[in-house]
Image (cartoon, rainbow, N blue to C red; front, side, top):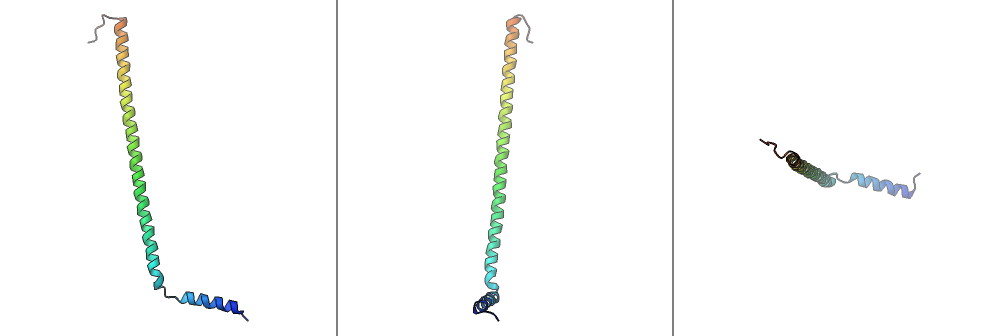
Length: 93
């Protein structure tokens, strides 16, 4: 024989199970919308992060290339000056 507490628990479960499921459909749709929105936002954030990373890498490569060109030009100038100071009659043409 079941106690009064067990019977009230069974009645509660039965009444919860008997609730019309259409009541929960709007909640499921809302949850799906939140999940879709989170997916879209995470994709957008990932694209933005990738774009910023690509821009940073591009700027780094270009600034490094410019510094290398500057240093090579300076080195050529120094070598030319040293060459002229050692051999002033050298023909540069």
